[in-house]
Image 1 (cartoon, rainbow, N blue to C red):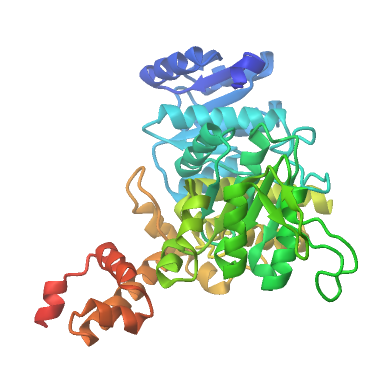
Image 2: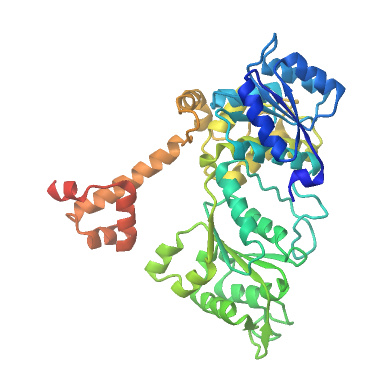
Length: 475
């Protein structure tokens, strides 16, 4: 259901360019919003004081005597809770810092993308109506009936695309494979799919396949009968039974042992299984969402993951990019976690100093969202005033903040920021492949053996790194 179906929100568009105001007015009017236009900061303040506004889209440059930052500071005194999105022509780390310093909820880079600005406004309205992101009544519940802390931030185009895909497949009884680095939020996406589906009233059961030995994993998945093995003093229901009517999330599925893979395949094919030590088939209706940070195609080629199971579990594949490739999500996560932990710990941390925010935005976050959460939890807890102090962020990354800010400023408008760490990792990988090819005098099979990968995987790396084999063979 769209925001327009709940109520008719009021969007204030403040920009000194008549063409931009006209375009945004037409866009939001068609979307079911009421639009108020302002060319000056003074007009914004009048509307904010005299009527209810739901969202303010505020350009940095305005006609009259006030710029957007000054207007925002004054608006905050009138309505501290009003969501404000700054519009800027400079998409750099510095502009994000300036916007945050002025109290903005988010910022939008010109030229304005209609779909993205609509998504951002809808997201702000949704967050304003419901706190946390999923309210307690509708939040996805785990098998114990509790409502876990689940906030899926989707400000970036990549995450918006994933949510659109999730919406299309939510009620289709098909298996989903979610891939991505550790800590990117694969379980949150799985919970989102479950929450949005017609299985939402059923349980969401999660199991980490890497956390159990082979025997214990089989027991965890399929349960066991009393006496099935030493210590089995009673019958136990496995995850499949507990997930009946809901969703079973198989995390780190690439670490599943061969016997467990075979049994999982049979369940997917027949919708029934035997408990360990049992002889009676148990029917089950559970949707499978699997996740991994490994390349399952490589595992299939190496013979450690069944090809038939691979095709069974990845009817639909959803890849979550690392956090370093979706900086818009990082910006939102920082403020969300600071606010969340400030309330949780009962302190008054609200202000993020410029240098602190720049350090957080410039850090490469190899641990992704999980690392952001841990660093900010520690930082909020240990901060001695209302200003956030950093704890737990590697010193090496903070020391390079100034260089990274100048590097980010050099990125063209609308371009994607890539961390130096990513570039360095890519270069190391390329050099390893080139070295192996040189040692084998261009023999791919021998080079693959040297690297410990399959020939097909090597070819993909050659294509990815654009390695000139003729040049290697001629050297």
